[in-house]
Length: 287
Ligand code: SF4
Image (cartoon, rainbow, N blue to C red; front, side):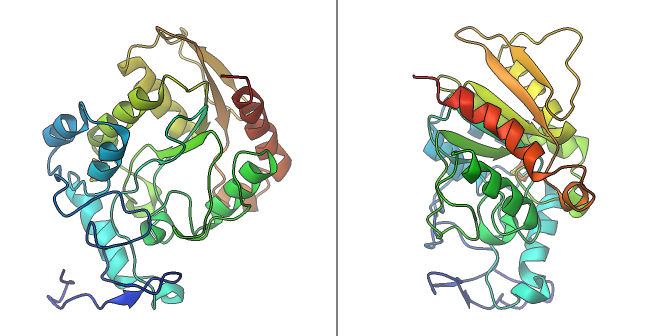
């Protein structure tokens, strides 16, 4: 693994386990929660994403997502951030790979975000872990009973989601948190495949922000759900019922817990708790 200057990235200790890792982290090298092994197949083009996302179980899907390299701009960005590091994390290894879905394999609730944060998920290797948005989200999930701990700091912290799973629409950290339309479309087969895997147990989807809302609607349409017409509009607290072959799914809109929204008071803790509380209530319906 070499940097811009052709030098090997230094091995640094994981902040919890103390094991040494390069940045980005090689697949199957012992990072907590790494779903991949050295042999996990790597998608290097959109057609390969479509092929590798099809016909595998959830564990293998997570593994394949975590080594995907189909978007050249995002691969360069995520790995560059991993090598260069924010000054406050200079002594830590960075995951620097795509972030797979995480949580219950048979969730009642699915939280759909935008993309990993450059110094959050892209550093810790787990979605919404190690950044301010995640702090807000996990604290609220804990208050409503969907997470076992109020904080999510790293992939070895013992955090566990209850009947809940989280996914990013685009699995790699993008520059300025803005994936291109082409990158969103290239990544979509991973989301569709994950949705198919969990649809049997799923009852509620919480879409964080308008990007997550549109991505969730698109994914449900692609896997055969009927969407209301006209297409429901995103808003905080908005809801829509999506009708599928087996059972309906409730889609809930929630402002993204980005610093821009939380600093300005556009999203408050009670507002977040209200939407996630509705999701939790639906999740408690007996199976
Ligand atoms: S954004 Fe998605 S498709 Fe693109 S490289 Fe990352 S995981 Fe692969």
